[in-house]
Image 1 (cartoon, rainbow, N blue to C red):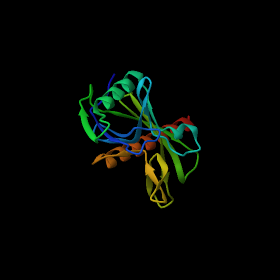
Image 2: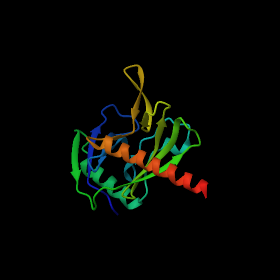
Image 3: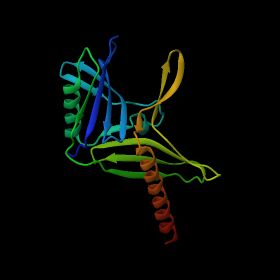
Length: 192
């Protein structure tokens, strides 16, 4: 199990409902996953990872634990952090330093949404649903997995996964570097 250093923030819900608390998981100080919902059940606390409103099944549940032991460890750490009557935040040292693998899936179109990307953190957590867009003027954009929410009567989009601090530029440039490498690899393959 190779969980990197992570911070768990828990906000208990006072109005009831299906979940008892909302959790934000920040991995390696770089990637935040929110909202993870916490529900009490007969077997203890259960984690409900965030979902989006995407019609694409693979993008509907963008965050997955690859390693079941890691999921159990994160659940235990959330349980250690959870207090029913107050918001809490706790940092946990990880077994390993954080590293990210990038998987790019280009589409056969020259402009617009040109690819999707998947990130794997320490081969423990997989995040899907990143969309890469390239425009005719050369501008590039990265779109994050989002969900549709209602706040004070207005509808808006909220990111399910976000990059923290100075990591936005670093991870975004790495995703585009991986995209350029994948396109070059496919072009070499077509020439053969």
